[in-house]
Length: 302
Image (cartoon, rainbow, N blue to C red; front, side, top):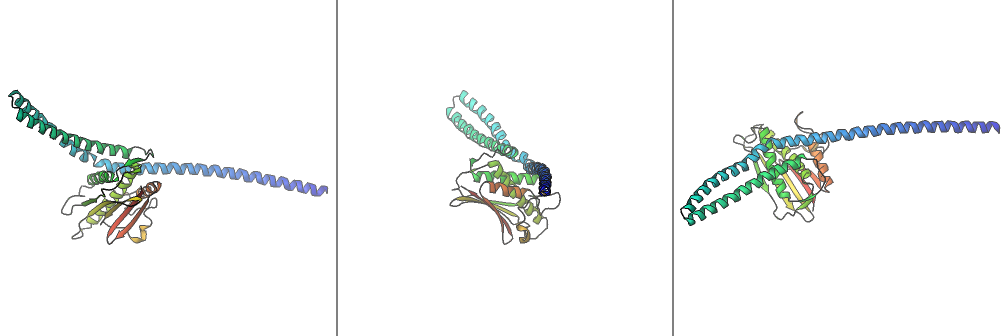
């Protein structure tokens, strides 16, 4: 009996020690995993910031050109108004009220144009600021047509600033937009959806430029962007007749770090982040092919 009791006690001590060792090992392993997870999250955050800054660089490259256009209008109409006001002052001094009234109408018409182009420049700057700031995650009622129109223009000028041959020569890049005017405003995080549009459009421009550089005869590069108002959602469709995406890799393009571009030309994160953004909005993002065209379809719930 005594021997059995001693053996049982020793067995219990062994089990207790083993349990203690296991608990220590589990704790150490848990700490290691927590450190690894923290490092992974930090790395992911850095990669996301890097990708955002890369797309911001593409955007800012063409901003000077894009802003210069409305500013030229503002400056020109301001100079014309100075001359008109001088003439109006002279007409008033001579008592020619009819001429003064006509000149005043011209000044008012030019003032409306100054206001329009000033707001256009302001809108471009706001788009820049939205794209560069960290996302607050706050959704806003947004006009998708206006957002798409703004980003396709900014992406175009950004790409052209980076690739001087992009819109040169006999084969200019064609851009077509077909916006559903019945599209309602929807609740989205505008800077996030703007990043998605910039990524998709830049990829399309790259594909068009790549195919054009191959020197194919009778090739006309074309990008088309359209929106559709569906029963419970809206669709954004971006289509290009560029170099295309082979069916064998089409399912992989939304995977992180997967890219069809040469080394140094892409991080492989743009479409992956875009896919996650659309998914976070409760929507979907698909890629398909119609004849030789690559088609990205983005669906967002109303």
